[in-house]
Image (cartoon, rainbow, N blue to C red; front, side):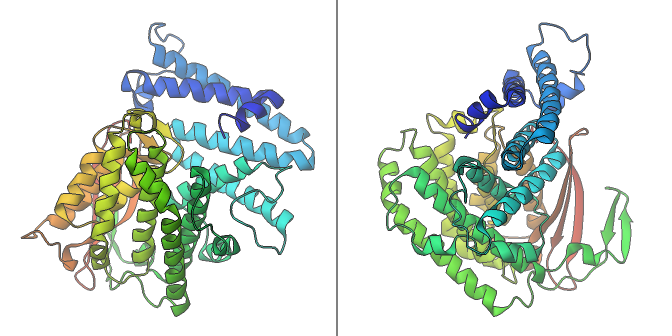
Length: 458
């Protein structure tokens, strides 16, 4: 999308060129001497007396100047747009704002604009499609909004659902049927990497929407905050609560859908197998990277979908083989000859890559060797994928591991010691992560909170 659609849009809409320039300058500034945006802020890069030799600070100032021009231009252009052109301009503007805000660690702003963009895309789709089912792979009217732009928002939706999705279970209920007819006609073998990716993205979105629908039957952590006491160490409010099960009363129909969605993922894996085997035979080829990534994402989807409606953290033990395979191929990718292009120190990729699957292993795989391997891979270098940073993710995984292993003898983590992360708040100015979890179940469950320091690459 960035190489074609945005460059074409920049020719038609001059204000978009300012966003492209801003992203290029910010990316260069963040990569300069491995520096994160927090360090740039602390060195007062907005001041006029920045030393000319400090390239990273000059680039950051330059980027923000063009970002301001882009925002002013977008406001003027949208006010003058025709109804037909307005949606396309608004969606392109939205995705660019999400990118630039993410690059600056303004994750709250990025999420707000991402949610807004997803609403715009849904309104556009519903207006065009009406009562017909959308195919989940392409634009319902590509002469108005290109397939590439729709697909970029589909990938953005995956990023949102993996981070913080403000949509209600009712919203997810409507969206989980997307592309069901398309998947019924899924090819027996994929012909191209792009075809395989589009089908996998659809499967993952449907799985996340099913998980979002079933979330209505999972206990709300906020519901336990009625009787509270303050923890002087963290300055957090600690709820006094009894925690019984992780999921309760999920209707049978959701379990049936869960099995159907798992079967779709297995069908995808079978159609993907020839391409995957070819990649393994040419492992150092650059095209093996997206193929191995898809394999990892399919495995991660298997784990998350299969455990979402369970009543115990012990369910994750069933997925040892999947965790092992995720970590095996993640290590290959991080050591790949072309891996630095995707996972290099200081890099930012707006799509889900390795961090989310590695986080799944770090938080939920209780095999001590595999868990530590996931943390080692996350700390092998510092890179970012959308809202996820490898350094911050590793810190969260390390803390939860320490909580669970505290007081446990032997390798096995019993159910009473297992914890579930319930909240994470990043304070980027103070380089601090505020973390909360619930350890154990029933009357003996405990609510644990902490502050963890983190460097500027969260």
